[in-house]
Image (cartoon, rainbow, N blue to C red; front, side, top):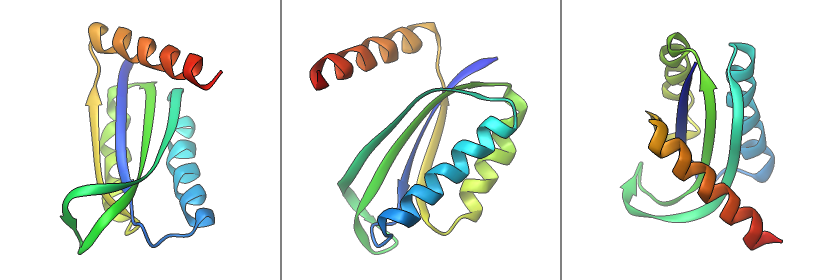
Length: 113
């Protein structure tokens, strides 16, 4: 099992319900195919550095998960097929990145408390 992180940007014209449905769709896809969710973050509406599909902002989401490598191709195909997704990026985390992600999550939890 490899450790991965996906950041994706949703179209800013979507309603809260549509955003929740889209996030749930991709989370369910991962779980159904044997992945284990480590963390899920909603970064909210952010201004883009450059326009994508004539939009200047988008809803950012982050998934951190462990999964076998063979599910990445169908997972990314689902992102490509969904018109609500403006951009996505999945990266494999090495041991240093996994440790850093855990420290970042711990900091976020203490900041909220």
